[in-house]
Length: 413
Image (cartoon, rainbow, N blue to C red):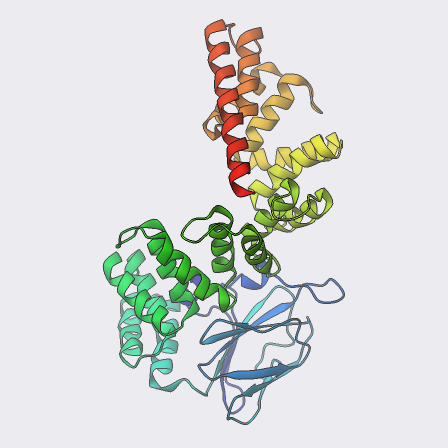
């Protein structure tokens, strides 16, 4: 949603008939955060085709399937691609030339916006004008253009206008209005509006919390290829929240999102393989998915990798390397682990004072391991004064936390 609100940042050039605009969108990091690799393992460029027309196919170094986001179609292409040929239903093929548009050839991990002059209408023109106004800082005027786009029933505008009302961008914040715009867009099939409507139901924003409605709209958006929604509905199936519990269905949705390189889904799939939930336990596959999340600075994945390498792989050096990285990023789990490592001398020199300090910072996570280590600190005077009463307290907390984790795991199976 951020790129949609801020508009296009980067070069612009008018290109051939039926291609109103081709731009390199420097503010849109989707090609990096939801990357797709080609057959040679090189990251692709992402082309976002903006049109309400039905696209039958796209030719020209395309990697994988087209992601249909309603009025926006995502096409991943190999780096170095010079042009694409788009085949809209009922229209003549449209050639999109990167070099003719002044963008050179497509580059890895960059996102390009292409506005096709078909299926847009007056509403689409107002939507594009709104983006230009957002880019120039005229937020109030941009919102007025979005209102005109909505009045013309240009469906993608509903989600963006809803976002403006939700966050108070260019207009006073009004969650109730945001809800109404998301609902209107969602009912007309816009994947982004469906995602945002689901989120409002899930969190009870401007509406009574309703997990069933949240699941319904998350799944609608997920079916259109939205990775955020795919991950969300997968989690709901895994936990039986708003839908009957279905572990296999949950895993499949998480996989779909992970294969789009959506960081939280890569993390989630790594956890499923590491714990053997809905899939056969496979530590190496878990590491592969966690690495994909870690490459995008998903701190929980980095912390988990440290534990896997130290506990299951026996590679203390590599585990500590990940652990330090996560602790620096402020992850409570990593701070707890590095604190314990310093207390017990696991892969690092013993440092009771600093280890105890890290453990206290990590106490909020409610981890059995952290509570157990704190119990040892108070029992033996590691980095603090001996206190038998506190030692007993933390031992009891460790037992309770371990039982709670075991119950959570049983519920997910």
